[in-house]
Image (cartoon, rainbow, N blue to C red; front, side, top):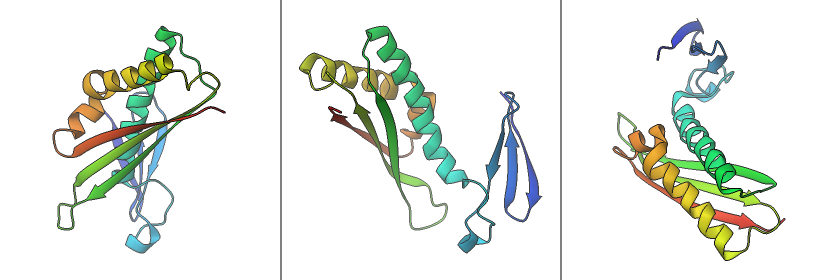
Length: 142
């Protein structure tokens, strides 16, 4: 796997992987950037959510679990001193849909997340080696 990142101007960079999709990377205005893209640390959190989310969707399809809406929120706490690595990360999986309140469905949702976080998601497994990675599940009937 290879990516290329080029400097556009100041703190603004553009990244491109083998997919040829361009991603804007920048720092906030308060940190000397122009605010055009996501910060590298935000992208780490997004990578956890994207990687794990794809796993969960795939696993739930195989389990024939249907939902109307699925969102992932990731909160990261960073060390006060440099390098300001993530020390604690919490991933919140939120599902909406009818029938999700049934016990066996909730167990399958939890099982899908466990499989992702503990086995399949490369990003979560890598980050878990350097930060305390936890998750919670929220189920909304509608």
